[in-house]
Amino acid sequence: MRLRFTIVLAALAIGCGSEGEPSTATEKVYAAVDGALVSKTWPARMADDSVRSRFEGGEGWRAIFESDLQAAISAFSSGTDARGLARAHQGLADLYRQAALLSAHATVEAYGVDGLETDPTDLAYVIGVGHAIRGERDSALERLAAVDADGPFGARAKAWKAALSRESKIPDLKTLAAISGDLGEVTPGTDPAFSPEPDASLIERTEQAKAMAVMDPTRLLTRSAWHAAAASMSAPPTDSGVLAQVAARYAVGNPDPNTHVELPVDDAWLFCSNDLMAADVGFIAEASVKGIDAVTAWADKSVLAAAVKPAIIDGKVVPDEVLDAGFALQKQLQAMMADIGGGEQAFHRPFALRSRVAVLLAGMVVADANDQYRDAGILRLNALERMEQTGLDPVFALSVAAWDAGNRNPLRPEELTHQLKTSYPALFATRAPLEALHLRRSRNAGPSNPVH
Image (cartoon, rainbow, N blue to C red):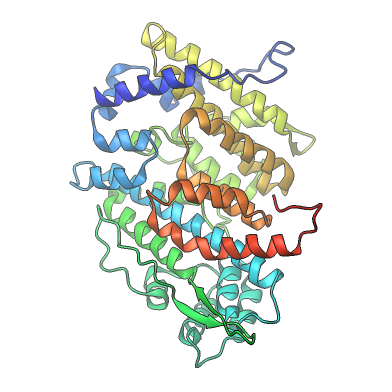
């Protein structure tokens, strides 16, 4: 079938590269995760032809395997696979939420931190929205209060202030659409058109009075909320809790502090995802807030928690240990898949490689929640590098770009968004703040300190 053929080609392409084993591969014996947990993962179960057949031959699932969310939306638009359509829409919701965070970081850093006396005063609006997306409510309200009520962003600033005064979380679709413009009726299987026209043209306070085209980051939030609504409409009613947990991985603003429970998760949510089994979905949702405590609570039921647990030493996530754990799980899964399938097959290694990346991402989530910013960054960049072998996940790529922008590094975000703009045209909205950040960083950097 076509998906199987695609997997074979991917496996052959990956096989031409290096194995990428940890440097300590010959010096230590890797601890294996409990085989009972590993056997529940989607790579292990899909070594069985009868389990995997559901996802072979379908254009939608081929697009999911290839991480092409736009193609998946189109392929699933017939409505024959409700969960597949819901997953594709949720992926786009996550992608545009991360794009909004990218725009927020670049805007705050370029126009807030590196603001110039000659900047238009109404840039305070986009800076305020950037703070709101970052979960910095007080800073957002302060900036929004400085916006001219009669200026081009006056009405939008008023609406944002009202929304933030009611609650500290990101507003709902109705409120966002009222601010940035209605995207039309939520219709699963479609994607609203994107207009590259700026939201306002602000005038610099210089003799030249140059016009500055400005795009409101709210537009990306609105698009994210639209796709989230489409996902909710598409998914079976029984999956509402699963959908909420899936969305938690790439949430922005103030995270949900609630404790999660293990839910029954259909394979449509797991196939080729970074959640290897049902319990991983709840674990990641909880670990994004509770960090190491979540690892302890979930280690006996989540394979990702079990893999990360030995990498926690003296209350800290140790990146090298997470890297070793990812490699160990990859090898363990490859051996198990060969046993289940009656021998090695071409798709085994690419599936197992995804499990390796999944462990790195789990360690990153835990380290972030444990305030280990540098260690989380090490795992983040290692996961991005490993995706050269598995295929670039656009949502994760945008999350890395957002992280970079928050670190005042515009170069990799520019490269990543450039790669993705053809498939996701609305990412054009991130261009102006990234260019501004690049320009202002370059202007402020000395000759011996280039922007990187």
